[in-house]
Image (cartoon, rainbow, N blue to C red; front, side, top):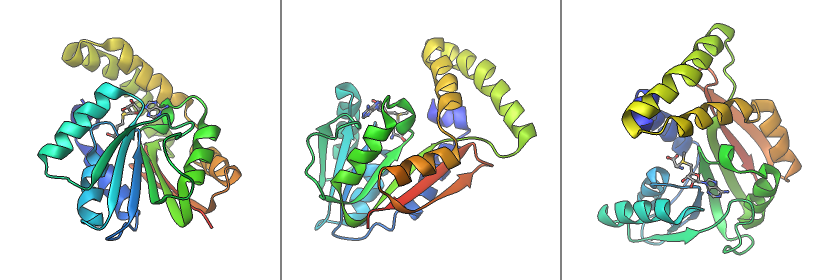
Length: 213
Ligand SMILES: C[S@@+](CC[C@H](N)C(=O)[O-])C[C@H]1O[C@@H](n2cnc3c(N)ncnc32)[C@H](O)[C@@H]1O
């Protein structure tokens, strides 16, 4: 469904986010709301055998799909941990060089709590990357995008996944999600420094980045 709905572009968005991660061999990476592990799979290769990746999600069934996929891909430096992004309870303070959350923050109810938890588990000098739907910066595109989201998406969801409601929710959750500037401010309030963001596909998606001093 991701490929179909985004015309395959989600792969380019993820690749771009990874290119901003600065990940290096030997580092410790946490991918929150990691689902089927698209990012964790790449990080596993990048950090190498002296590094370590945790694929984490709140949903046990989703995590199991990710586990199976990454084990089949030969990723043997990855752990799989059930965790709510709001607390990240299983993780110690200052334990990761890089924390990522891709198309996950939108689903988290208490985003401020989640951002504070992400800050807590990062080592000093570590960075957070958030890849998420955002606010299109070009008005005509914004109208076409709204039409696509609220009409085409639920129909595609119904026809292909037999689930119109989830795709109606997807459109609504995108509309409700904080825009670029608001999310940047929320990151700063959680303690992050040097926060910036990069719009992708005219702001349909944005990558936010912040650092722990
Ligand atoms: C759209 S998927 C994104 C999966 C993957 N990160 C990607 O980019 O393909 C959203 C994921 O967020 C997870 N999720 C939702 N609420 C969460 C929360 N409070 N804490 C952690 N994960 C959560 C869901 O279980 C789901 O796997």
